Image (cartoon, rainbow, N blue to C red; front, side, top):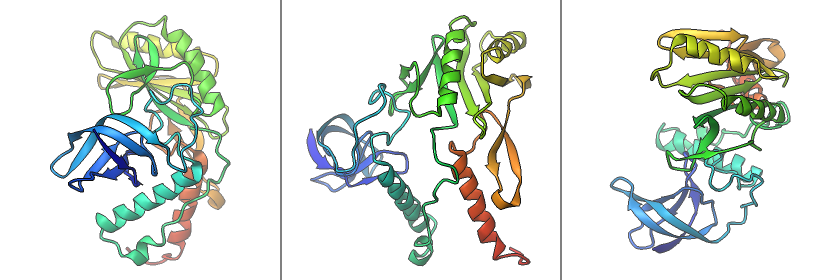
Length: 287
């Protein structure tokens, strides 16, 4: 085992250090800047290492105590223990590095990268995808295909978390075959919708439709849908409103549960507003 210090964060969430002998980069899942760790290593390509077993010897200055009972086993939140201001700062730095190293942008251009404040105060994630293991919802362990069964998730907006707790009760009565659930909460925090994920198997279209109906009957769930064997099966209204808005322009767009958007509607709105403001300077120009 070797000892080393974490000096940075990777785009995928891993901590980054350097091997004390060969200077190669080391990827350390779960480690944060300033942490001092001891670990066994495995090769990661030709130019780096990845930790296998790791022991944290000392905490970095911006590491906080976990507020979730499922940490550190659960890998759903890579930076759960990293202080919020540090998260924003590292996301900004990772973007700058990518624009410079991969995109070839100048330092003058990357210096213009700003951290956007949410347009709405954050209350937790408005969307989530969970695996289903033996009819119970679960997240993956960090860097693993193994699953961690959960009873609730502190990272979610309270309304979404409550609805999923009710969904969890119903899952135990359903036919096997469901492999995952994507869930979303509307911007007004008054509607929850689900997307179901199946791997095929012996499940029939009728069976999937019955599963959608069963979960649609859960209190707080307004719509359920699924893509199954080339068909879209839908019960209720799975569209969520207000998650993407154009700010002063007054427009809003609906998003179907399970599709991609930023997990915080305040960030969605801030990003759209920033793009509109930037585009305003180009009005009348052809790109």
